[in-house]
Length: 133
Image (cartoon, rainbow, N blue to C red; front, top):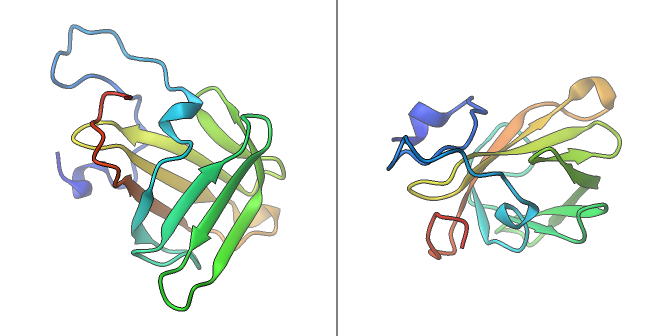
């Protein structure tokens, strides 16, 4: 499955290798502490920037670290609920769109809450496998 096949999708995460295996629940660990790299963006967080997702589920911090110059953009506090990270102020939603061949997340920004709108897509660059480990 290519990036173009996934672009714009927020489908449920399933095990494509074995369609008979039930869908695995998405946990906060699918997002937190992973080395995310932006692969597509229409926001102030540019392609090749790094995304950091940290903190407890009830007070998530999402940070964009631009490669040059070294500038950090910190998005409003969020919380993990129903398999997604939701901004406390409604500005953004971050969803896991696939685990295979590697984890890919997408962030949708809502311009009606005072944000700039747009989205970014990032992939997990940890190389630790795609099965949630």
